[in-house]
Structures are given as structure tokens and as C-alpha cells.
Length: 366
Ligand code: PEP
Ligand code: MN
Image: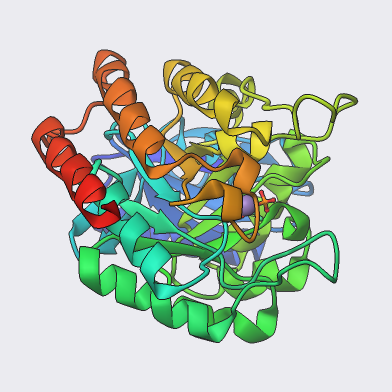
């Protein structure tokens, strides 16, 4: 339930309202200061509350609104329609995921394989304009016999790549026991599709003050996904970013998954949380990634996560969906004007840096 009051409500009256809400309703009250209004969120068992009684507490109370959705903190109503922003500090500066900010690019390999490949990839994606390097140290694999990630040593390589390029790091945490260790390196903790409903893990990352990228489960409904986000928000971490990475459908012959791009407008009508689209896992084939990346920008995504590998044919995981470094640079050159056109352009001028990095590529490879 949301109680909005006039922004000009005197401090003493605000204090009195919150005390009364707590006393009368015996429920958790949280203050949310919006652009034009101040609101109190009443959380917990609000079904028994009579809105008329709340309105009588103060003449400064303007509206008492019941949030009908099962996801309360994740709902758009919780922030009175205002999109939330997730700001991440990276060595290169603060980067904000949000509707009124430039498109954020996350790029890197599926797995961190060795020092040379991760540093090379980091340098190139940085020069091409990405703000974050992705790379798995702990990999959720369908087969127990497949490469499971280099674990702790890969985290060390990500830290080195961060140091070398200043890029923020995003990497997956699969186990509650690893949260501290992964959070020591990651600027954003990734919860993978297969762990979207791992509630102890959601609560654990929710108890940290590190931004969390929550991937949509392989067959999760939008509501289940938002309820998973609610676990993290309810545990005290407001910095949640949603990532659509394709869902299971009946055709797995020509695409790995089906990219549900309709989530962009649908989520906008339901939640204030920022959105990332991952066209790599969604399509499973590198040749389809550029088209779907462009479509995601046109649909209004806040960010893209793209898998990139110096030699996809030899990749230890997800090679078929990984762009080569050269193709990633080319895609960035194509995407940035579209982002600009959609009002999500970066203030940085990318082309010169990008060109010089293309020559870095040819030099390092000759
Ligand atoms: C990944 O990002 O490499 C990954 C394993 O993603 P997902 O959880 O979406 O399958
Ligand atoms: Mn992958």
C-alpha cells in the first residue's frame, strides 16, 4: 500500500504521520521521496488495512493506493511511476542504468579462459565504447562434464582486466557460499537464468549492497521473474537490473531460445527496474546477434549484454553465439548512431578510439 503526502508537508507533520502509521497499523513503513511527492510504502500484511482510516491521519495525505500486484517493491506504483536508476561506480567513473541515461554496453566472453584472452577482449570492448566487461568464473553448465569455469583464479583475471582497462566487472555467482568472494571482484553480481528462483541466493545477494543483474529463468513468466526481483529488493538491496536472455519455446533447431523483446514495453508498464537485453543467449547464434541488438535498442532497452570472444571457434563455452572482436567493434559502430537517434546516445565520442583500437587488433595479431 502506498500513502502519498504533499511534498510541502512540514517535517514535524511527516514525523507524526509515520509514527501514526506504525502505531495504528503495526506495519513496516518506508519513505520514498519522488520528484513531486513523498510517499510511504506500507509493507507486509496490508490486506486488513482500511484506507479510509489512514486518510484520516493527516490533511496532508493526498492518496492511499493499494498495490494490487504481488510484487510490491518492484512495482511501478511503488515509485509512483518514476523509473529507478542503478548507478555503478567503476574505475572509469560512475555508470547509470536507467531510462533517462545513455545505453550501457556490457561485453565479454562467456567464460574467463586465460589472461591473454580476457585482457585482449577487455581492451577492445573498452575502446569500442563498452562500460562493463562480462565473463564467467563459475559457469552453470547443462552437463557436469562440460567446462565449469576456472573459479577463483578467473576472478583474479577479471580483477586484472578491471585494473588494466577501468571497465566495471559483471560476473555470475552461483552459490551462496561464493557471494563474498565474487562480490570482492564484481561491480555487478549476475544471477543466471538457472538460478532465478534460487531463493537463498536471491536473499544473500539482496543482503549485500552490490548491484544485481537478475536474468530471466528459461521458462519463467514475467510475474515469476518480478517476484524473484522482489526477493532481492525485500532483502534490502534496491539495485536490481532485469536481464531478458531468451526463453524456451518449441523451436530449438534454428535458435537456441526465443528473445522475448515484448518484455521491454511490458516491463515498463509493470516495474521501475532497469532492463538489459542479452541477444547472445537469446539467439545462440552470432549471426543473429546484431539484428536483435539493434531491435532491442529500438524497443528501448537500457542496456545490452553481448558475448564476445577473440576466437569463437575455440571458445570453451558459447562459441557459436560469440561475436569476434572485429564484429563487436563493427556492431558498436552501427549501434551507437541508433542509440543516439533513440535518445540514448553516449556523450563520449567513440569513433576515434574505436578506429585506433581496430589497429591495435591488427597489430596484436600480426
Ligand atoms: C551467461 O551469461 O554466460 C549465462 C550462463 O547466462 P544464462 O544464465 O542466461 O544462461
Ligand atoms: Mn554464455
